[in-house]
Length: 466
Ligand code: UDX
Image (cartoon, rainbow, N blue to C red):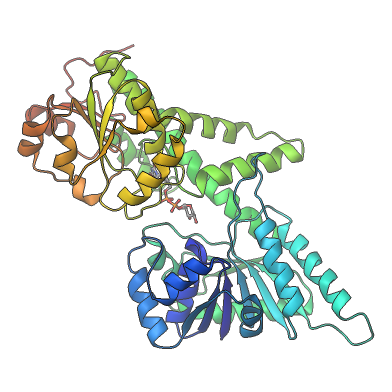
């Protein structure tokens, strides 16, 4: 099938590359000429395991190409995927201007039947608005008796996780397809089923529903997952106060199939490009129809607090003023296997620690360059704070002479460090672990003062009931 992807961000690129890998002829369009030039050289602007190899292979095989030419993009694909960004507007709603720009271009250039697929996360009703916008332009282009070419607008939200996006795309749990009931939409439905059939591995993974429900499904899924995380973070904080170890509790509740065992890990709060933005956008949708979403407001509030948990723990140990103290940070990206710093809890932590006077030695296996860019941006008005960040060469280099080590992202490389070497380089053997990577008992046996999220009661000498 001939396919066009508009937007070579995370979602567009992964979708385009994976669809090419399955034998489709894919053209990816972006207005950012620099990005397209990078991709034409088969260089990848984002870090995602496996992506580079797939791009190189498919470009070589002639199934994948990149261009800035919108008209060429519209002419190429029977299916036109819109995968452009929908950033948060100032009021928290999703800004759809890029989506409408692409829809406008498709309507302006199309001369034959097109299936327009919305991959971007858009609020309920956006598909209808895109349909209307395209129909309006077509009516202007074909004012006479001659009928305009037909089209359909399909909602097909993505459920990719950064770091495992290729696998998520190639082996999806489900593929949501939202469409209307007109003959054009039904024709589009058949095309979508055919396009996605190979990804089902013998099972039909496509769930068809109406467009509004499909749009809502994406938000509801992410809001549910964000809720689980905030719930577990709150349980972990309570566990500490009640002298309970959250780890067996997590295993105990996760064994109930109604609950399931994934997404139950307490930590430093959720970040990334989806959960914070989608929770806010859903709240905004509730406000707009006079139904404030109290549960989601609490989910966001708990998450904000959780991003400061490690600082609170340090304050309990060291007092509120960190002047003259040096801390190591392991992990800056919002999660492992990505260099994505969007809404990363590390950004909140870094500012808070610096404002309290600390000197920071930070390390991330992949996100160093992106972190430097984001932190410079965050602290552009505070050069005095920026000057107190040192970008380290390795985990141990970061830990050297530090008064405490803070673990922020659970990269594999942090899971089994040389503990003797670590203790030797730290000025004080204090480890504040925001990801519960180690066994508290073993850490204490090794001589560390080890603080966790919800596991502080495990044989801790100082643990007290409230
Ligand atoms: C998420 C959704 O999972 C995906 O379906 C959607 O398409 C986009 O948003 P992503 O943002 O890539 O994907 O990351 P995910 O792995 O879901 O993690 C999100 C955040 O939750 C991270 O900050 C992670 O550290 C945190 N998290 C996740 C926890 O704190 N505990 C958990 O148990 C799981």
